Image (cartoon, rainbow, N blue to C red; front, side, top):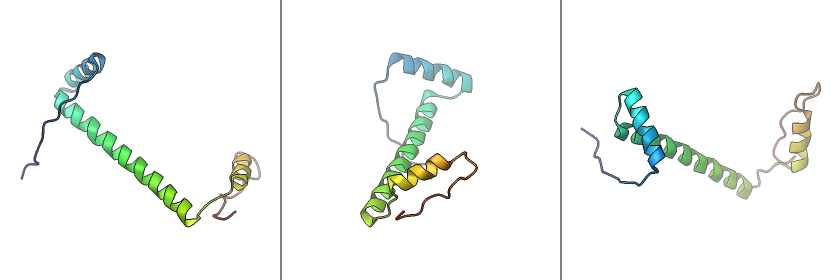
Length: 91
């Protein structure tokens, strides 16, 4: 069964549409195909970013934190002969 579709309109800058036209020609694809790919990619990235932010907020709420001093010591050790292991929660 085919996926239900809905038309959405958006005003875009002329130069962006020109770039889209150029790419559509080069790829032998429609502008609709390019827009759909772009929206799918953007939503996936934005949803993942929001998920990662929520995970971080959940860690803060649960008290799963690292001190700035522990992180700075670890970061300062990177690239040296005595790299420290990644700090653990509570350090």
